[in-house]
Amino acid sequence: MPGTYTQIATFEAVCADPYRIAREVAEQGRRVAGYMCTYTPEELFHAAGYFPVRILGRNSGGTNQADGHLPAYACGFLRSALDMALAGELDFLKLIVFSHTCDTMQNLADIWRQCVPGVAEVAITTPVVVGTGHAVVYFREEIARARRTLEQEAGRIPDGRILESIRLYDEHRALMQDLYALKRARPACLTGRQMMAAVLASFLMPREAHLPLIQGLLAELEAAPAEAGDDRPKVLVVGNMCQNLDYVTAIEDAGCLVLDEDLCSGSRAFAMEAQDMGGPLDRLARMYLVNTACPTKHQPGYNVGGALLKKAQAWHVNGVILLLTKFCEPWGFDYPCLKKMFEGAGIATLLVEVESHQPPGEQFRSRIAAFVEMLEAAP
Image (cartoon, rainbow, N blue to C red):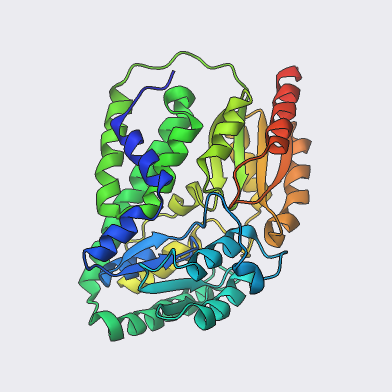
């Protein structure tokens, strides 16, 4: 059975009140910059003196105010984020950062500018085709433009300070990759909920505070005796946003083991590799664009289904659960290909549409339970 670790209690507390630390940091006089996308170069904002906090929306509640500005078929994640802003729940923000990922995100930037006064805005256009030399050059110029905008408010941002922030984030990403590797090697060392709490807390805490906690957790896990074998079916959870720990809890309560995930609000944020050539902006541009492309991007020669299948086979998972945020067209377009590739390799899949700003309902639990029964019955 997984152990009890002091770090996990801290992470759970952070997730229970996601923006408490951001409010406290703002009250202490540090500027807070909110962002919503993995393609946001956080290091630049950190170097400018901001605390970059990821806006994940609510874990429960409606979106009545946002529904007057965004149609009901816009994804619940962005409707929830806008509703929070309109309700004054994000009044600690001095800056909001938008990266062009999907059409809804792009349109939200215009709505936010009109409807949420008093918050500065920076928009960074991420190329649709990534992983090419031209894309890197373009994205570097977008980062440079954002730097000039920040310097008008925060003062000069020297290259050396950006490099210091890059080193901090590189060290943190490497530790998170180590934690994921340990979880795959020893699946029962942490529950899915404990692992997800550690991950989500990283978006809601200053990296300087989260990094030593992960170092401590890794040290305790590595020193702990090996866990007994776990014969529950192993699953890979795939999708975009999942900021509510109860989803992972519901999946494991149904009788399976979440071995790993490939989520926008999860491992994809730590998958990028450090770059050591060129100036700081060149390093940032290459690091973010050479990263595994999400479904809103196209990377020549990269097949999302093939990459995920390779992971699933290497980790010997029994099934794949796709948590699809309702009305997320990019992931919806990718799913038929994913399903065909997984099931052609003998790996069962389950697609579950979720409203990420709502807790899992009974229908969700029932479908997961039926899927687990099918996995257990498989030869």
